[in-house]
Image (cartoon, rainbow, N blue to C red; front, side, top):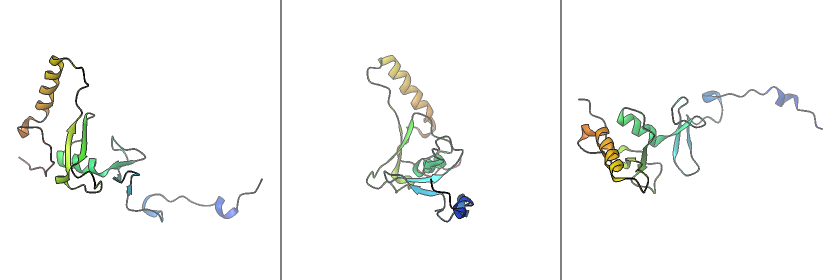
Length: 129
């Protein structure tokens, strides 16, 4: 068995900006989406979050709920995270749902977005009341 090199044994691992390979906390997902370093975020994984989620949450002024997703209107460009290219979507109820449950679910969704008169699709900058 080969002995470890004394130079490598004393190597330090610099994190964040001290690391020579640091790119400002931004990286690209294998599917082309931009990811931002956001340790502690509820949706963080390894501790990055998709940038389009962060943009949407900033505009909404809250975290997304478990049944909400953000879609790119121009799906061909996964790096275009401008508000006008993002849509807020909710996941529908499963197929085979009872009509009474579907109506109840629809009322719940409408109540969530009641202040805007209708559920928003294209995200826009928030205006303070």
